[in-house]
Amino acid sequence: MKVSKRDILLLVGFLGILAGVCSFLFIFQPTMEKADALEQENIQLQSRIADLRIKDANRSTYESEMTRMEQEIKEIYQLFPVDVREENAILLAINQELIAPLKVQSVTIDPLIEVPFLEGVEEEETQISYEIDAVEELEDYEGTQQSEAPLTVGGDDGTGGLNPYGLKNRKVTMTYEISYEALKRSVKNICLQTDRMVIDELTVVYDETTGLLQGTTAVNMYCVPNQEGKEYVQPNLSSVLLGTDNIFSTIVVRSESGLPDLEGGADDEEGAEADEAEE
Image 1: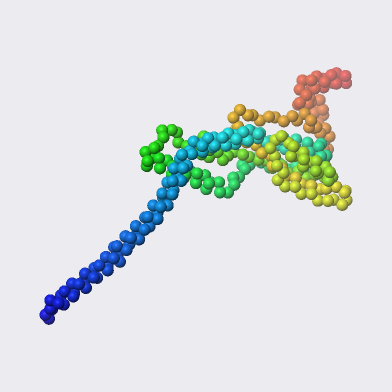
Image 2: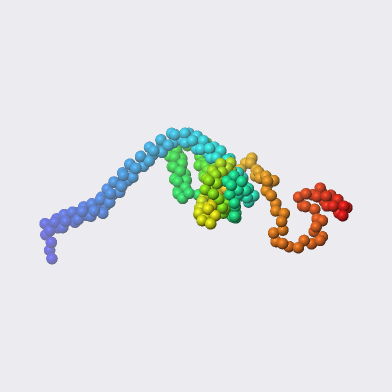
């Protein structure tokens, strides 16, 4: 088959048009799309860089404010005792009996536990760290990195200043019999305590047989252990009366009758010897 020169020119023209269309569809158009995407990303990065430059210019203000807030946090923690023990809970119940007044029926003391954090704090801390890293990357890019210690968020121990000592609490649950006026005084008495505590739960039920209220109060007593320069203050238990009646009605062995009191020491022993001499 013989192809004329005219057909050859038409075939070459068709192939050229096809090559141009393919180049537009598979090369030029994707390149333009990528260029548009890069331009949009560049606009976003420019606004981001402007924001970081503003933050970097106010870096000293941020650092001073963070230092001030850390100091305020430390001062707040200083208001908490370093420990809350079982004797503190017992003294609170005795104090309630005297001030309200009320008749305590039972006291339940829970173990000391860590106070849980609020949700979302970790995410916020990560965002703050990201902002600082972005500023430092910008300084490295522009060659303006300052020769100073890296900025840390929070305390020296890397905890972010969120809970540097570890806030803890001990729950004390008291059940009691009380009047309405005494109930108001008991609530006010807890609010006036110097140690940090809060009423977690309060329920009262009217007792028709006595005309009084049967109540239950759960109090969270807070402490911050390991505070520098603070020690646990032993409460004064001299006002706590020790029972002398034998509530179990057990038989007293003869050899036990002359034993001195463990708290009395030598004075009680001398008294026991004098009684034996008189006998």
